[in-house]
Each structure stands twice: as structure tokens, then as C-alpha cells.
Amino acid sequence: MDTAEFTDWLSGIERLSGGQIALALAELGAFARRSDNIDGRVSTEACRPEAASPTAQAERRKALRIERDVLATIGERKVERVRYELKMREVSVARKTPVGESLLAITFTGEALADFESRGFDDHCKFMFTTPAGEAVRRDYTPRHFDREKRELTLEFALHEHGHATDWASAAKVGDKAVIGGPRGSMIVPTDLAWYWLIGDASAFPAIRRRLEELPAGAHVEVVVLCAQAEDRSLFAVAAPERLHCVSSVAELHAKVRELALPQGEGYAWCAGESAAAIGVREILRQKGLPKEVMRVAAYWKEGAADFHEKMD
Ligand SMILES: Cc1cc2nc3c(=O)[nH]c(=O)nc-3n(C[C@H](O)[C@H](O)[C@H](O)COP(=O)(O)OP(=O)(O)OC[C@H]3O[C@@H](n4cnc5c(N)ncnc54)[C@H](O)[C@@H]3O)c2cc1C
Image (cartoon, rainbow, N blue to C red; front, side, top):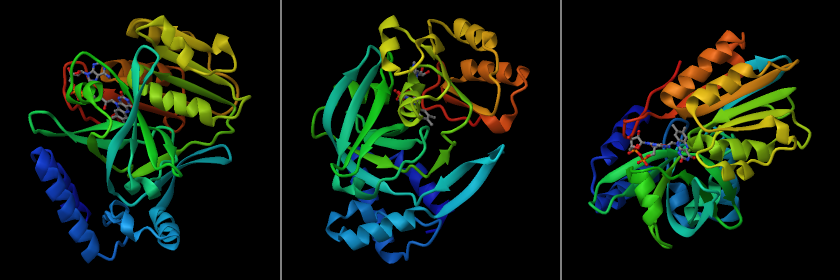
């Protein structure tokens, strides 16, 4: 099975019933045992805890960094892409914690997380689960926090009216099982640039919150977030409160971004959220003359579309 075949296999997983996911994982495990795990191939090595001796773990971690390339150059600094070996990891719910008004954090645990890797604040993994009706579903989520010692991975779900993932998260109980696929790779944006803009709605809060934690204390960061509830302001730990802008509509979000003056020096603008809203932000950033190498704008979901996937160019 090469990468293309694996991608087909992965698409097929969506059509499987709940119990069949386990069978599919067994199939993948059998493949991993057959394969020599070279670049571009797939392994469930981490799903087999009995193989996790300290030496084997160190070797695995080394093998995870299978490719590194430069996406853009900002002055003397580089935006890099690190690719990992794609793995499926079986996990279970350890605990649920409400985060502000909009997010529900779910912490998953499992020995398979021993060699989980996520180095970029906007990484995403495939969260795979089975609905009560037996439908296998997968959605994208940001690894918000990872504790290797405890083998714990936390995702933050922006709860919305209805959707398989939001419903699963709301109803999840300790011990419920799911599968985490990936991340396939990370985009590494330097943490010592002159400025950063972080823009988005609740689906982007996990990435924005993670980035705020990663940046050095004195970093010049402007945050523009669409907060359905004003209380969600407290979710963002910014050093300069005047640089945190909580708005209550997409129109206000666009207006605020339009109003901001580009700071001096080399920086990076990041935005994610509803498709039309994100496209609007990208247009405003372009009008400000920001080169595409120093911005990343992503559509994380689309109004009225379930399981939305579309790459913005
Ligand atoms: C790279 C990436 C990273 C992401 N990280 C996160 C994350 O960390 N946390 C997070 O909460 N989301 C994240 N998302 C967004 C998440 O994958 C989508 O919101 C997903 O559609 C939710 O699945 P669902 O089954 O609940 O809803 P779906 O079945 O996909 O959609 C059902 C309905 O709900 C609407 N809908 C979907 N998402 C939202 C939303 N966020 N708000 C309001 N209405 C919505 C749709 O328009 C549709 O009408 C990420 C997306 C990407 C691409």
C-alpha cells in the first residue's frame, strides 16, 4: 500500500460502521507489520503499546521527522513545513472541561499517544468517531495541548447548533473511544518576528490560544476574535489588553481588520474561521499590501455545509 492507496483506504473508512473502524485499524496494523515504514508509508506502530521500549520510542520520534522544507522566507527567518509519518491512534475520553462560553475541552488518553507530534500552533488532526447510528465520521481539530508523560491530548470543540462532531463532544463520557489521525505535518512560523496578527472565530480559538501561549511574553500581537459571548474575552491571554479586539459579527471583524495599520517590520498574519468570513479577511490583508508569504488564511467550516473541505489558494 503506497500513500495514494492509503488515502483511498482512509476515504473508505468514512463509509464504515462503528465496529468496522476497529477492523480497519487491524487492517492498517497488519500493513504496518508487513511494511518497512519508509517515508510516505503509514504505520500504526504507536497503537501497539507492547512495542514501546524507550529505545524504540526514541527511534520512532526520530523517524517522525520524515521531511522538512521551507515554505517562505521572512527576512532572515524561515517558515518551515515539517512532515510526520501518518499514524492512527486509538484514544479514549479522560475528562471534559468547559472553556469559557464557546468551547468544550476534551482530554483524550491512550498509550498510542506516546509518540504523538504537533509542533505547529495550527496543526490539525483527524478526529474519527462513530455516531450513535453507527456512522463513521471524521472532522478536523487542532491539537490544543499535549502531555507526553501522561499520554494526554486535549482538543477544544467550538460547540454549535448541530453537527456530528459537536453532538459527539457534547454527549461524550469518560471512557468513550475515538481515533486521532495525524497530524501529517506542521507549519513552523518563527516566534521572534516583529509582530503577529491572529484573527478568527470560535473554531480558530484553539489555534489562537495555543499560539498566544507559545509566543514570547513581549511579542507584539494583535488579536481580532469573533466572540458570541463577551465573556470569551478572558480566553485570550494577551499582554496588551488594548490589542485584544472581541467583535460580535463578521462585518465587525472585517471592519476591525481593515482599521488596523500594518506595524513596522516583518510579521505574520494568521486567520481561520467560516469560509466567506475568511475570504473577506484575506482580501483585506491583500489590499493592505501584505505579501502572501507572510499570511495564512484558512476556511475551517462553511455556513450550511457539513464536513466542509476546501483549500483556499
Ligand atoms: C485545519 C482545521 C482545524 C480545525 N480546528 C478546530 C478546532 O480546534 N476546534 C473546533 O471547534 N473546530 C475546528 N475546526 C472546524 C471543524 O472541523 C468544523 O467546524 C466541523 O465542521 C465541525 O464538525 P461538525 O460535525 O460539528 O459539523 P458539520 O457536520 O461539519 O456541520 C453541520 C452544520 O454545522 C455548521 N457548522 C460547522 N462548524 C461550525 C462552527 N464552528 N460554528 C457554527 N456552525 C458550524 C455547518 O455549516 C453545517 O451547517 C477546524 C477545521 C479545520 C479545517
